[in-house]
Image (cartoon, rainbow, N blue to C red; front, top):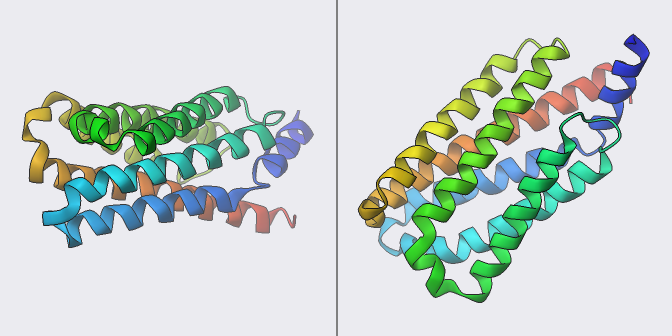
Length: 190
């Protein structure tokens, strides 16, 4: 049993850097939203499209490369496909994103936050001490997501601020996960 868990952990950290890249991408977009609030709403539609496309593709690659080792790889794949397809649709029709972005962003981040909570529980089952931070990031992402879905009328600057907060939260979650996977990889001498 212990050897199976060790094998699972070794295999699941093959592409640890993808989680780090996802985090850096979300943090960069989050910082941009605070630095350029006036032009941010239109820019957000374009940046979201690109970030969703890249993030979805990264999640798809990560889940498929670890499908034999991760218990919940299907959820990561489903979220990756949903994020990837949403990115394509928004790139093709930016006018749709201008109207629907509060709902799209809110629901996608809600799904990512649920996945983050699931990953935190997986980390807990593997005995990783810092699982609580991952859980906190997931819960915080859920709170911001619900605010975005519940108050879409506040779009404008409120959406920019809330989106920036959600992007930073999800970004820190993925960066934290990436570094934890890298540290674990180093401990296992892979």
